[in-house]
Every structure is written in structure tokens, then in C-alpha cells.
Image 1 (cartoon, one colour):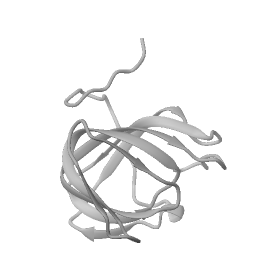
Image 2 (cartoon, helix red, strand yellow):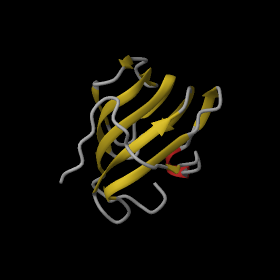
Image 3 (cartoon, helix red, strand yellow):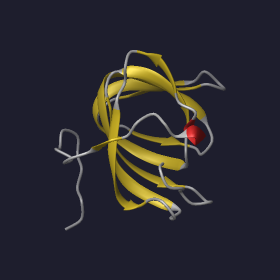
Image 4 (spheres, helix red, strand yellow):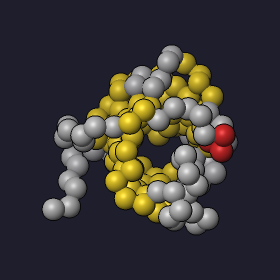
Length: 128
């Protein structure tokens, strides 16, 4: 059976994903956000990956690693494009798209869980 994720679904166990990827250049801006996740398909050595990501309340800046389509399963906040200042709010059921190399701010106001599909033309290195 294919994985099915809908707002409010239990996504199963996730691993702690520390803010330590140099390529993402993480900067904590507010609070003490903690991230976790799981890669369900693809990942290091592949040009695509699919998985689950979660983050507790707080704000951080990062450089997106790969083009990514995501659907918010729970939580609320906004993503801010650091170049343009555009603010995109998100809530359960919203689907968003980000692009490889874009610096954004994740402003998480309610613990968030998302399902994502990413593509990186040069392939994902280990540890991302």
C-alpha cells in the first residue's frame, strides 16, 4: 500500500535533524526550534527524495536544498522570502513550493509537520 498522509494523520517515528548542514547555512532567529524528519524514498546519491519533516515553534533562516513541493499536515506559520520580503502563510492542507538555493525564513508559530517531495539536479549529498 502506498503511504497516505492527510492533515492530522500520525506520520510515525521521526529522527532528530540538527541544524548542522553547512550548505543550508542555518541561523536561529527566535526561540529554540527543533527539527526532525524521515526520508521515505530517495535521498543521498539520488536526485529526488520524499519524506516527512517536523519543526517546533521558533524562527530560523536557511538556504533551501532542492526544489521542493510540500503539504502542511499540521501547524501554522509563514515562510518569508529573504530577497523579496514576500510572506506566505501556511496551515494544515496548504501545499507550497520552494526552489533550490533560495534563502527563506521559517517562522513557525505552531509546531509544524509537512510531507515533502524534493528534486536536486546535482543529487542530494549525505547528511541533508
